[in-house]
Image 1 (tube, rainbow, N blue to C red):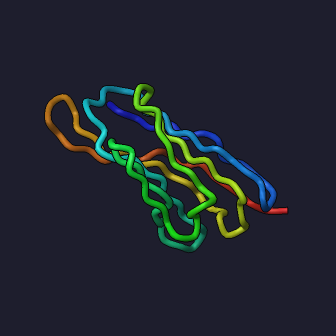
Image 2: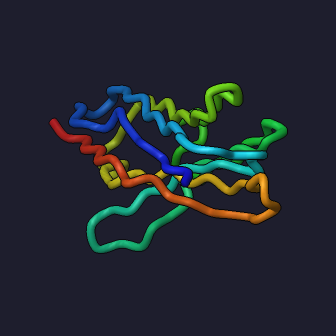
Length: 120
């Protein structure tokens, strides 16, 4: 069974940086796309950034130029480099993988979430 384990969250001052990681364990035949989402208290979960198997990326407007999504295909690991962090970036961040299994199934799984707090 595939599981995603996130790491890298924490408390950072405004203007600071953090790097989130999301590592998959288990058997994955082919990853279609991966992404980062976030959910602030009292708000709905929103897309932050995505990256396809071909390396195409997409960002939510408020993070463009500050966040960079990347992946290590060999390690089935997803990253989110966050710079110039703002208090409004405070949220729980979740990774998501969409992939094909060796038995031909298509799955979408989520990480457990990691908290990012931007505050002085």
